[in-house]
Length: 230
Image (cartoon, rainbow, N blue to C red):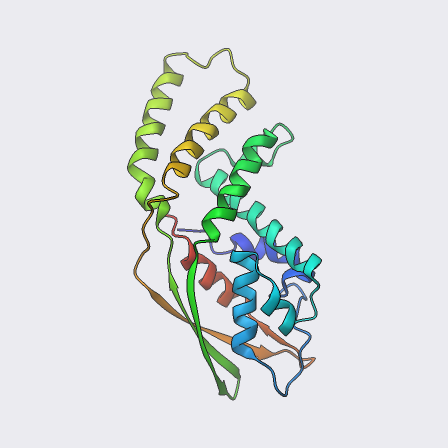
């Protein structure tokens, strides 16, 4: 499962002005009165996972450039998390990271996220703001590919133990390992399954300045259920 602060610590604070999710000072510019809370949540999800910015820009003061910057930053954060999950996070974050492999991982999430399935319900006004139910069908690709990934890791480890990679630098070693793992994951792109639908209630509320936002915890809950990491 994803670490709870994955995007909150890395993506939200890094690109708060672009993706307006709160907790780092980024807020919706819309004031009370005629505020479309469901549209706001729809815009956040579309901008974060689909790279579609119309609804997001409509319900915030973000420009298309800012929204795109947030989307691209989120893809890189997710690729970085995948590298950590596959045990080469230090290599991914280093200056020695192969740029082609890094771009492949970013583009992998660009494609995977385009298959995100979620449905935003109508907003219900409460004393605290607006409750908006989001139904998410989690992408299950890592569970689907787990047997292949495990077999690959076992084989790669055995080859390493036999000295096959001894002449390689650490960067060359992790590049070779990462390319093999990505080949497996890409092979599942057109045949992965979805998990059981999950309903998540998001609170859209006004902060002390009267501006609308959602909490870091609510966004993390949505994000954790979008792609499952077993």
